[in-house]
Length: 103
Image (tube, rainbow, N blue to C red):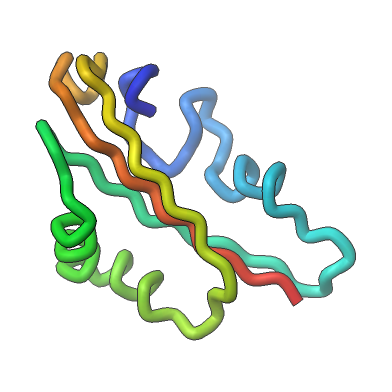
């Protein structure tokens, strides 16, 4: 996202986030599979506490954080010195949290 200058759940090519996640977190032989995602960015920096506070203040993001269905989590924080596009060439930190369940 930072390198390509976009921000969104869909990939730069328009692929929905769950299809991207499925490549790394396959349904396999499970009868149920589901994923969720929280994203946030801020310039010039973003702490873990600030990211969490922003998500808590957003009902859909808070719902992901509090959902009892999730059994796995993946977290990524990326800093980009001069992010193009949406970020206007600023230094940014982008945090992505993906939630998953398979059973």
